[in-house]
Structure formats: structure tokens, C-alpha cells
Image (tube, rainbow, N blue to C red; front, top):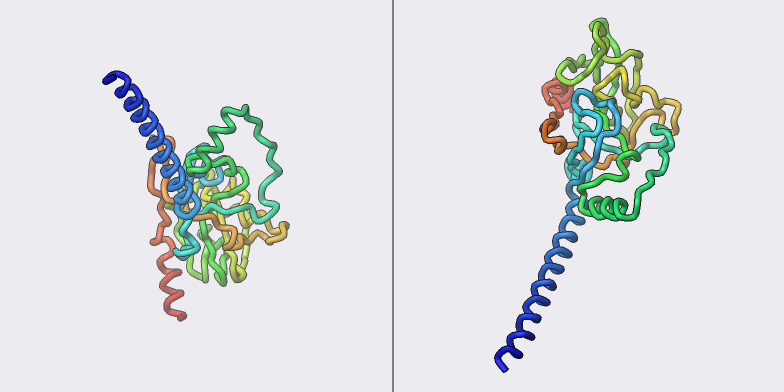
Length: 242
């Protein structure tokens, strides 16, 4: 009789253990989904337009509280949806069912980014109302008549000192941003999308969030700097005009 009582009890314990595991898994999945939806998520870098700040195939963690709760600042590295016409049509990626299922599950919790090819990542140079001009006699770009020293992050070809191969003079419309890649001679950014519907400007509504950190590979791990010193005089001029 004792043995017959122990058997159902042991079976019940196993079932309770499995139930608890399922509950923990579902709760963890839900929490991860909420974090990915409202707080942070992962993206990978498909091109070299942000070198040397970001390398091809780097994975980054993006803070999605910006711009909803945290204002965008000049110098921020931003992930944004294609405003239309910036990206070439992408071929559909074919995966076997197992890989596709795993990729979907990882995307739910924010550890995979199958939609990275539909997004772009650039640095914010101009905010709404800014007057952005390039280049002066020293090859520098200016924002609101303040020249910028961008040597801390801009990648230029050997022997070149101009931070943009082509000159431009723009005033950023309301609700939009002027975005540029750090690899200035190899970045199809706001300068080269003037023939699209948005005229090269990126609507703030298209911003997914600010890139915080390079998370993979570990050898590239780094916090991403927005270089406030580069834009400090522009910020001071803004405050002085208020």
C-alpha cells in the first residue's frame, strides 16, 4: 500500500515541477516581450556607414525611450525606420522552419533583429530649425554658424580633411532630423537622399531609439558616445537665444 501511495505522489511532483517551469518560461517570455516593446531591443549593423564607431555585423542595444520620454540630442546615434527611398528593396531571407522559429522567438524577446535591414543607423547632426552648412575653409561643418570639430568620431579617407565630400546648406524643417554616417565618404545619409519624398530629412516619428552599447562581438563591446563636447557651443548658443 505504501508503494502505491508513493507512485502517484511522485508523479504529481513531476507534473507540478513541469507546470512551474512552464509558468516561469511564460512569465519570462512576457517580461522580455514587454522590455523589447517598450524599453530596449537589439539590432545588427548591416553596412559600414558608421565605421569606425560601428563595424559591419556588430550588434547594438537600442534604448526605445528616446524620443518618447527622452529628448533627442545632437550627436546621438539613432536607429530609424526608412523614411522612404533610402534603402534598396531587400530580397526575402529564406530560412528552414527550425531556424525561422528560433529567430522569431529570439526577436520576440529582443535578442534577434530580423527587421534590421528595414532600418538605418546614423548620427544626429541637425535638430528641427537648425541651419547646417558644410564645409568651411577648414573643411568643417557648422550648425547654427558654430563650426564643429568632429575628429573624435568622423572617418575620412587618407589625405582628406573635408568632413563631407559634397557641400550643402540646409535648414531642418519642424519635426525632422538631419542624419549623417560617421564614415562620411561612404554613407548614403541625409546629404544623398534629397530626391526622396522626405528630401533627405528624417521624421522624428520614424525614430526607433538611441543606440546605447555595442553588445556583440565581445571584442567590440563599448558604450556609444554622443560627444556632447562637439556640440556644446551649439547648445550654449541655443540657450543664449531663448
